[in-house]
Length: 358
Image 1: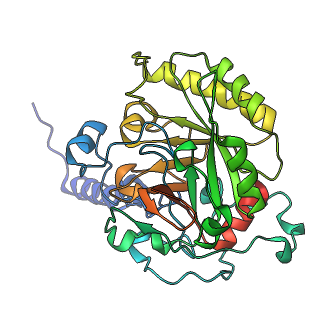
Image 2: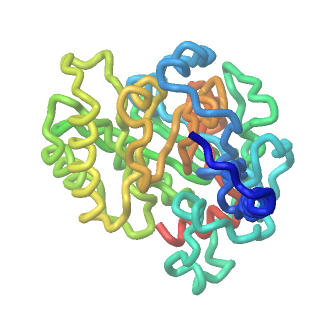
C-alpha cells in the first residue's frame, strides 16, 4: 500500500536528490595517466615489456656467445654517447679527444654511470686524466646497428686473453683502446698464462685495466674467489674486477644449476671480491645465460653485456648497463688476429667521473 504525499513535499525531495548528484567530488572519479619516466641508463620501449618466452621467439638471431671472453667468441664492448640521451636521438659523430662536460645525470641513472658525488672526483685535476683516443678499429664481420651504432659512443676498449698472443699495447692504445679487461683466472685452479704480461703492458701503455674471472659452475664460489684474489693484485687504480658468467658448452662440467643456485653462487663470489678489492664487481654475461638466470636480478651491480647483432636495449630490455661488448671479430694494429671490442655508456666526462669513483 502506498501513501499519497503532498505535492510540495515531493518537489523538495526532488531538489535534494539533484543537489546530491551535482556535489560529487572530482576525487571520486578514477583518473588514469601514462608515466613518461624511463628506467635505467637507456631509453626503454614505450610498449609493455614482453615475457621471456615471447622475447625468445621474437628476438633477431644473435651470434652464439664465445665460451671465454677475449679468446674464442667472448667479451665485446662499445663507446658511450656524448650525453645520456635516448638512443633513438643519437647520431654517429667524430669523437673529440676530450668531450665537453655534460649535464649531471639524474640520481636514478647515477648508480650505473656517474655517481652524483663521485669519490675523489672533485679533487682530480684535469691534467691527471688520461687522454681519450677515438677508436679506429675495423671489423672482420661488420654489423649495421643503424642509429644505435657503437661509434656514437666516446670511450672504447677491448678485452683480451692468451688467444691474442703478444700484444703491442702502445699501438693498440693509439687505435682507440682506452680500457682493457684482461682474463686472469678460470675456476679454482687455472690462470691465463698471458695475464701478468698483459696486466703490466696495458698499464705501461696508459690504458685503464681490469681483470676478469671465468666462472665454473662445478667449483665452489669461495674457492674461485680465493683463486682470483691469489692471482690478481689489489691495485687502487684498476677497474673493478669482473665475473664472467655464461654457459660453457665446452666444459667437462655438464651441470646446469637452477637460477636460484646460480645467483647464490655469484653472490658469494662477488661479495668476497668486493670485500677484498673495495670495489663492487662488474657482471659480464651473454643473452642466453641472462635470460635463463639474471633477468631482473642484481639491480645494484654494474653490467657488461654481450650484444653483437643488436643494441643492448633490444637484447636486454629494461636492463641498465655500463659496458657493451659489440663485436667479437675486431681488427686492430698491435694485435694479430681478432679481438673483442667494447664501449662504455656515457660521454668522455662521464668516463672520467666513473673511473674516479670506482
